[in-house]
Length: 157
Image (cartoon, rainbow, N blue to C red; front, side, top):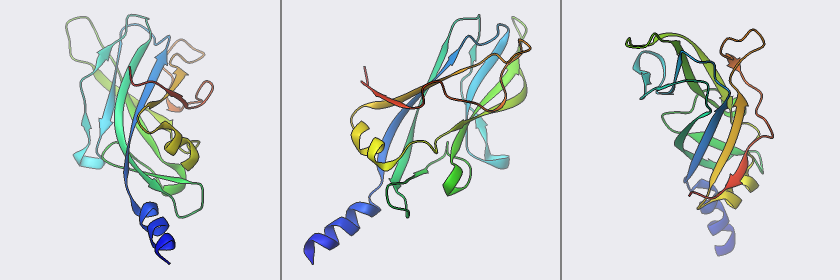
């Protein structure tokens, strides 16, 4: 009985998970940042200007084991979407050299491929993923992006 209670309690525990998303070959003269919050309360965090070199953002999310065995439920101010299709946003803007960016679009970075086994295996480390940040026409990739090789566990260093 005690063992079942402990398993049930462990299921409810929220864990912190460090994520890193790398933008591969982002187009120059554009700015990228994380979105924190939803709707009218959404904030664009400090942005990075692209000069063509890869960019990376780190964020921490909360995660619990999902109601479906083996699934993960992501929570926190960066997380968007339904339980079955969680993601976070990278906001994209164009920028001239000495001006603030003009924000025009967002990228959805999917979290749905991260299962509970991966969450538990990555505790104390981080999960990294990357995507091709330039679309076929040479403009920034927008909408839901395809992650190159999915999420992988790496060291926090």
